[in-house]
Length: 89
Image (cartoon, rainbow, N blue to C red):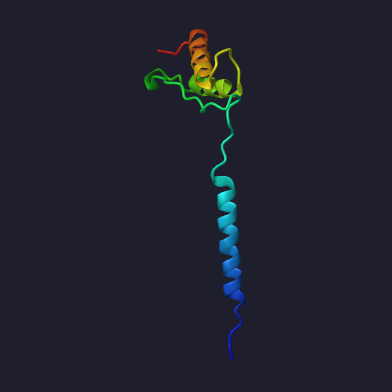
């Protein structure tokens, strides 16, 4: 008497669903407001301004500022934030 193949079928379904769900979320990245690459402001790690750079990157990507690209906007915003919130030495 043969065993039912329900376990094999169930395993196959689980594998297929896992592959489908993994590919559905793998390549999604929200574009910037002008479809330019996501900005990454250059910062000095030693002066503890990572939070300023993060804020500038998010604001530049969202479209704040007057420059043409998200990177240029983020760099300008970062420079303005450094003036208003200087790093603690």
